[in-house]
Image (cartoon, rainbow, N blue to C red; front, top):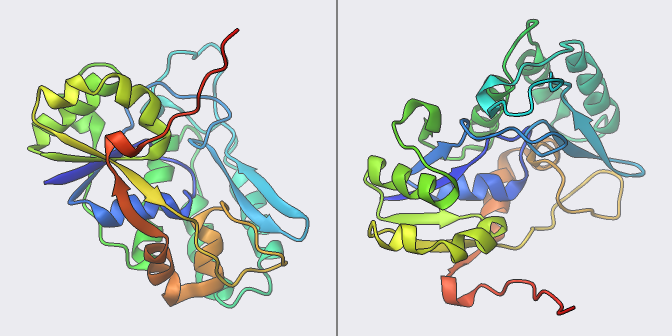
Length: 247
């Protein structure tokens, strides 16, 4: 069984859904420490002047050690602002009218709502709208413990996974701690994804916006386009890490 494990992010990018589409089970890593100004509570849409951040306001003062699934949204009114930004900047997109009502409903939150619940709701909706096959498990519902690679390895064992597909951004620490996976008989590969070019509002094309950009512009072609960016996964020996200059 192949799995991937990733934190729940706000309106994730196309590569996030490529990972979901490749594995038997996708684990939502919601029980690790929240990071302010991270993808966990913000992402970008395309505008006439480039990429623009949409950020969910959350409570952080005095809560420095809180886990992602403990983070509360502090200003539910953000939903209307984000919907307006999407409606304005995608007014000419072919599929905005089809999906804008659902987006508005997705973002509506009560005071004290949890960020992880919002993100999971968005991820599930985007999977459905783009026809991405998925099987989700929340890490907080499992018994696995540990830090970094030890935690990932224990999740693999609990789920009976023999293959772990990792995002490339985790390569530095995962390669350094690969023994934790090897001792449990888990083979590790790294996602190789080349961002696809598709029809987009406000040319020239700019990559790495939220997958919402793809959906609103390409509609039923979204999954095919996501898969077009997939390349054979990197083996650990093929991953080149940035070299640190000597002092």
